[in-house]
Amino acid sequence: MGPATALSVMSRLRDLESMAWKDILGGTGSHQVETRSIGKAARDRLVEIRQDDAEHLVSLRVDGPGRVWGILDRHVLRVLWWDPGHEVYPVPRRNT
Image (tube, rainbow, N blue to C red):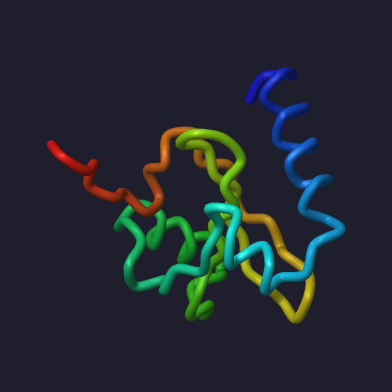
């Protein structure tokens, strides 16, 4: 991640900081995803970092395809990784 991307991610996280989780997950393009639904490489990485007991992950939309992934622990997001190409939870494109 380069400096410009890091600033963009931090700015987005700062914008979300004042919102309630119900609002973040309900209208910002961000959502919870069942861990079993993410791609195999991401599931394997969860095993490597000993976080594979999480039932759900949170995908925070930063920009177009860019997502920050984490585990919601009460009201705090424990950030796991940056996914610039929306590859952790690939979604088929519409109308293709």
